[in-house]
Image (cartoon, rainbow, N blue to C red; front, side, top):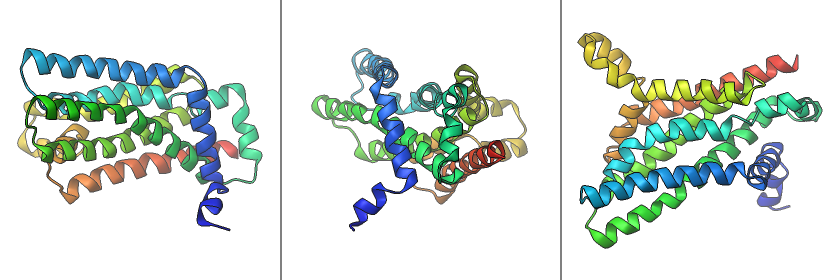
Length: 243
């Protein structure tokens, strides 16, 4: 049996395919992706034509804010809807571990987030045609985008696991993501000691560092730790719910 066949039969990958099929079989996946691309496209081309800047600096500066809204919109239904209709009980009675369920759903929402982001690569082509963009920050920006998508997807998944209401799941995830995005903006009023302490929890600060083309282990550790924290919390919630 090939490695691909073995992988396809693992519960996590079966659940991932199930989630992806569910997401794109209805209108929600296309609506969320379409709105994300329309809003970011308008902002990109506004900066392009009004400011005469053939680069992606404006796009990346606003990306954490955009993802704070759109990733919760992707993740809000994942656990909450299944709990509302009762299908999560059926899923949990199957011979699968809670960690397999969470892993499969997490991989699905992360894939959906990256699929939503992928068409923005068209902006790079536009910048190349009309200007001479610096590819260091562009590569760094997309690398940072992958990390922030991973972290926000884990936050959204956790928020969906603690409620049966999709709106509440969306609101909780959005609030956490926005808090992590904007926390640095409120630090200007704080003493230096507090600034150094709280600047580490700022997602936008770490994303900004990576998007400049600077690969610092502290930034990578931040996103890996944040993702792992909310992933583990989600597993613990599902273990508790199964008892």
